[in-house]
Image 1 (cartoon, rainbow, N blue to C red):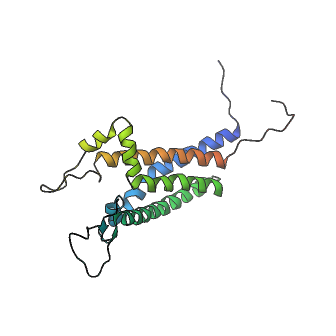
Image 2 (image 1 turned 30 degrees about the vertical axis):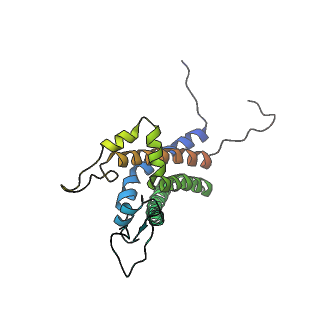
Length: 203
């Protein structure tokens, strides 16, 4: 029977990966739901060139407001998604910093930057919905799952297809958490690089 041996760097890397993965998973819903402004939650998925009012996304052709200038729906959606990702990023960065300091872990800036690009860049793209819906059509027919998994909020209202409790929301959360694992792995690798081999040294 053979026993696997791991270098100190591998052990350190795995420990950091475990800490980051647990942190990202544990804080995700808090940062994604508690810190998200209701306005951003409603507007972040808006697409298209239809003119809407930026305060609540109401189409400009349905009502005239003298004190508000309508803009394209896609502009409102991008602004809301950006606002949401900024609050999410602030929450994740603060909690991660606290965990790293409490555990005495080493996390250099290049690792932090890589994790931020993966976590926050993909979060914005996913929450804009276009890429998420594109993937849903091509992976195990999840577009039919989205059409089936809707929620009726009020008796006379149209079914909600994207909010909490819907299939689209579940797919959204699944992608965020998967990418959090990827971000943690990349961060751990960058924080604890492999030892360079010295030329001529024994293997």
